Length: 75
Image (cartoon, rainbow, N blue to C red; front, side, top):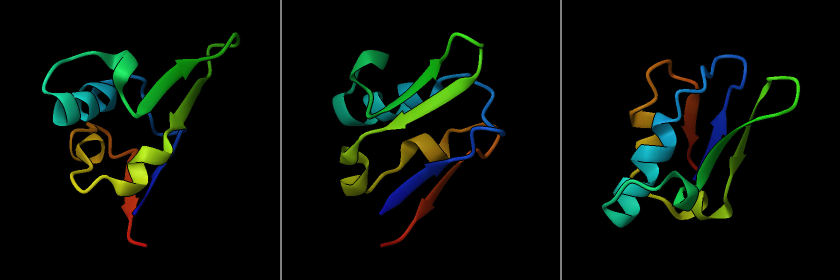
């Protein structure tokens, strides 16, 4: 599975981080998430996706993204 994020669509709400870590660890800790939403010095969003995401069957990050910025691709 491959997870991609359209950084132009992402609004930076970070719900993906919360959904990811809660689904994996049953608590809220965005620092432990496999997907990280970062803001650079210019205020632009940058999304980092861990290689752990390739083995994720739940893809809660995509399911809870309110703007549909996250896509899940088979294979």
